Image (tube, rainbow, N blue to C red; front, side, top):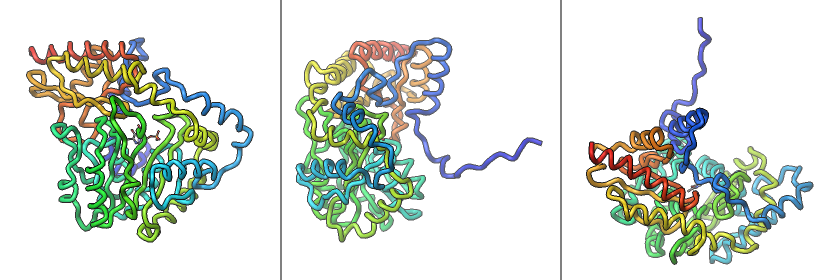
Length: 407
Ligand code: PLP
């Protein structure tokens, strides 16, 4: 008799994270057979030759002997003070180190904060497309994602009227990802002010995923949400993974702002859940002060001549030269989210396309529907490869789309 197999959590069947899913597994198989792939599925700077700035590396190396003990569950006091100072400088009211939570990446804090907030059946307003961890964490904390559209025809910006129309008695929070993954959209101040007014009217928590806050191109600006939120409870997320190219250090933070009376027990819930997992990775925490007080090392990469700027340019130019693609140029973050159009789009299935691209052209992209959109004609690439590699990738994509257009 075969042994009885273990049952797993039923709601996992609703959860997808295709950035590291089936296609990535197939890519590893192909690599095992000796194929040379260009993998554009993960926004992982270190995998493309980017290094964390040296002053951050020194901040850890110099204190390695101090990193043995656990820290306070919310993080090292000096790190939390540096994060609070960054927010005070932005004009966020009601911020102090007591309201800062350092975690093992923003990923951990997204999950922890939704666990602190949600009761079974509670709803969270999420952008579509979203970064799929937001959907997964909502579902695994017994909530229900309700999607507001950030439609390509609207430059991937949300419509505040639509957000408000989706609010029900079960709605608990509005999530904004700005600058956005996967679209690269950045949100104007007036739009954010309207979302704040909606959250205030309906007593909702604002959750601002701002992990790409200073990755901006061509004069784009970043408006943080918390300074506009005033007394409205707002949890803002930032970290070292992207802006400081230190994904592997697993350092992120969440800052609670707004009137402390309005956030009720939420602070206590975050603190308790933080305590249960003891603390965040300590060596990484020693880099936070250096990151927030040190020189700006991301701006040169995003300016003309800089690696990310030129990579984005290569993508924009390749799409402009394509007969089959359209793109809302990303204003920020590390991705482009092109659409397949015209004859190549007939009967198009983004998964089938991504698989064909992988099998026949050795290129790995993420199908657009992985980001919880109802349409199936988009895909995401990261802007982290060398510009020439991206030009090569788009030449191969064009070959596949041309074949499909002619079929
Ligand atoms: N939020 C967004 C929008 C992301 O794109 C990512 C990673 O790609 C994360 C959060 C998680 O980042 P980390 O856990 O490395 O801080």
